[in-house]
Length: 181
Image 1: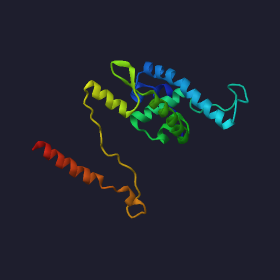
Image 2: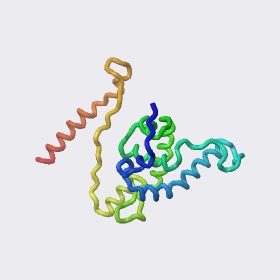
Image 3: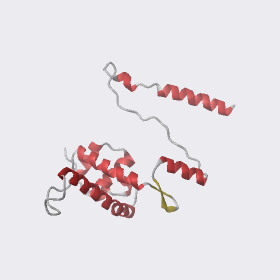
Image 4: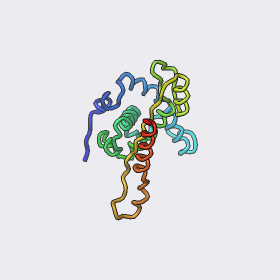
């Protein structure tokens, strides 16, 4: 089954979570580091300098901007890579590789602080230090993420049972009752 969606539609704010102007700025900012990473990887595989002229050889199935858009959609909506592959008209493995490449670049870039665009928080320690310095109260979402597990009666199912739900629920209930007392 092949579903091809206009890629301009996929770059809409409803899918990516950012405006087209911000997407354009982000693409300009990350394009050069991505290209350097790709060329570095090719250099390692070749074992030396380029043997053909620039532009020769196979083309990417997803250009850089499409890789960025696919990654933003995945991060915002948690769509499976197979669904994104259908939307972009490529295989799931192409999306998986693209998301892995772009996520790394986004993580290295860090998060902007509202009202202070020059400040970027790159690690969780940076976030905690900033919050403490600014007197900001942080609230972390510690909800459990459901995982697929083998059907009942099949081997390996017990490895997926941690009992965390029952234990966490009991601890939370006892802490709440202590706080109210």
